[in-house]
Image (cartoon, protein in one colour):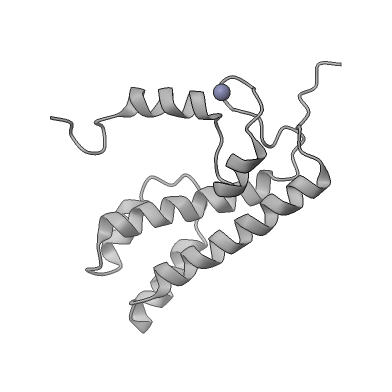
Length: 136
Ligand SMILES: [Zn+2]
């Protein structure tokens, strides 16, 4: 059988689910804090959007003059968690999307949205380094 199976047992998945829920709630509170009532309505609309939408930054910018970059980052984290919550019951959850290797449980609890093992994530970030910050 060549079907990819997760190394995570139900107990491990529950631990990830709990961590995910906690981080999601924390992010929602952070994002909601400091928004006016009008912005909160906009914010609810943003949360209802599908994941992977590259207009997150633009939307975050329109939400007010809090640090737009920070909000965009938290919005991406939020979507990553949301996405992870949907993938959690997939048989291949917890496997690296690049090499197919197992992502350690500790890493998944620290960052439930992780889709790569540490080695692949590091090389992914090297590949994309400078795109966001303009390296000098
Ligand atoms: Zn990998």
